[in-house]
Amino acid sequence: MGLRDSPPEFLRGYDDRTYIPPGWSEWYSPGRKNAYDGFDYYLNENGELVPYPPSQDNFFTDVMSRKGVDFIKRASQEDAPFFLFLAPFAPHEPSAAAPRHENLLPDISAPQPPSFNEEDISDKPIDMTRNPLLTEGDIAGIDERYRERVLSMLSVDEMIPELIRTLEESGEIDNTYIIFTSDQGFTLGEHRIVEGKSSLYEEDIVVPFIVRGPEIPQGETVNGMLSSIIDIAPTVSEWAGVVPPPFVDGRSFAPIVKGDTPPPDWRNVLLLEVYAFKGNEVGLFLPNFSASLLPFKLQQEGDIPKSAGLRTLDYSYMEISSGFVELYDLQKDPYQLENLASSTSPEILQKFSDLLHKLEDCKAENCRILDIEIVP
Image (cartoon, rainbow, N blue to C red; front, top):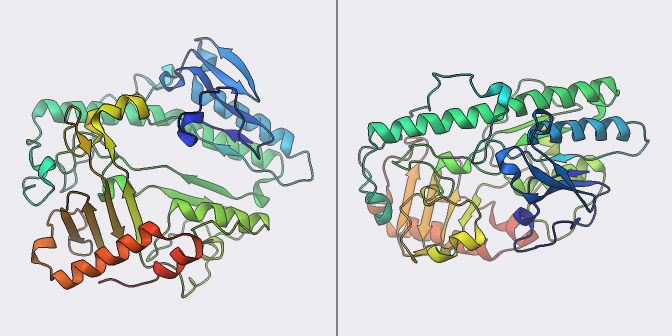
């Protein structure tokens, strides 16, 4: 069963709001109007557009939660295994909170790590160096944005235990794997970026990743490994006892989360990419897009350059298509305050660059051969 936030998110430009992707036995997804606001929208329910007029009972996250609970109750009565993919909007803009949560946490403020309102950004890309220090008004706005995001997640915090309780009551909890993660991080004031998700800095690329299920030890953290969204499909495939198709790039981490020693061919480097687009295409391809979501200010009709990079356990390497390079020692500088590119030998930078471009062009097994290389 798929509970999905927006069909165009997985298939750009597809206008059929009653479309059902192949492979799903049930499909529920916003099909008309704006469910991002939390109220007054239509759902594509297995090919039929169903209205959800504004009312307390129709808050989007709550509706998704109820549909997830209902599916588990029905699926648990069958002998066949089931898979539920549930993707609420929260905390995506406009970060709508359920009315019952709107007045909570009035004094909460955004975290301010060492990278917050970074004092010296002269070693960052030229577009970023134009960003002024954050003002008191900027910081107040960041705090309010953070509060909105937290409040929007409170209904998700209620949804998760409700799903787990349903699994317990149905007798399926001991036979069910649960993955909790997100599609990207979010910058709020770090490196003078008022808000954003389109950089390759740690704030944007690191996401929560939690797994619970049979034989997975409770309360433990797997350290010293690099994993990515591309690893989810092969992992779920292994749990389901099926072989993933040959075009899959990732690896299964199923044995690792149970406590097994990582295999010797586990990756040593991850590829990072942000694709280029034109400033005048923002409204066409990125609905609800705000220029503040970029690490630099959007120029009218300007090209947004492609950026790509490598993340190892020790280093973060980035290239912009304009030629600017960043390199950070994450062991000594976890907040990426000092760009080492200008003081690093050209030979080492070339090793990073060569591997980066090989990984950009690889597929499937070739990627799994390349990403075990160690750099520098």
